[in-house]
Length: 252
Ligand SMILES: C[S@@+](CC[C@H](N)C(=O)[O-])C[C@H]1O[C@@H](n2cnc3c(N)ncnc32)[C@H](O)[C@@H]1O
Image (cartoon, rainbow, N blue to C red):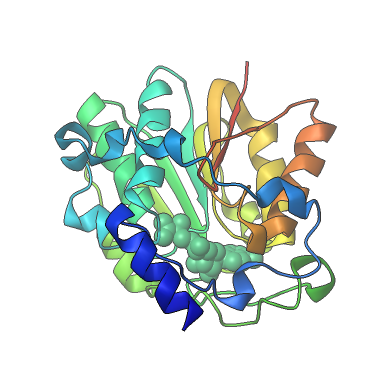
């Protein structure tokens, strides 16, 4: 009743009161105060809705990713920024392959030949550490497209593409990249985030970029802790993108 009344008042402002699914905000949540207070005015300018961005977000990309247009926009520009950086693409948590497809599309259009290493179990979470990841995640969650479909989607005449199935960290040994120009890390959980970040930082070329998908998402606080832990060891710092769950690391 109260909710309906509030929504009647909010409707003229195009706002709606909604209940968040309980698993999104785990309890306990380290530094819970960092997640409160949306700054909505920061969201008035949305260049990811422009025609210039939309042309990159073709169905092969958009229909095969969990990422919003806003997040794809970040990846698009980070990949463009690393145009002159030597090295390969790397992604931990390729899911259905849409973000990886975008990386390959941008590279192709820029005339850059890169090798791509795209890793996932292709069966969702297969190993969880409840003590670190929290009790709100479970084995087999986050199951997206099967390996065969993703391999097909990422076929590319210009790039040497390696789609690697299995659990990170084990599969990192199959990645033969000597240098990485751009990496996207989106595995949500502590151990694969920690090991994939470490792997990338050991190989990230000067001016290379890592985009972390899960840094500011409360349900993935264990990924944020892993990122801070590894980056701290390398004397590096990420910056969190406002109003997004993404964070960025630029290596100088
Ligand atoms: C949020 S989804 C990735 C979404 C994807 N980047 C996209 O563009 O839609 C997280 C992925 O991490 C994968 N994953 C989680 N733990 C993993 C591990 N230890 N090794 C490999 N993949 C893992 C899951 O299978 C899932 O596909």
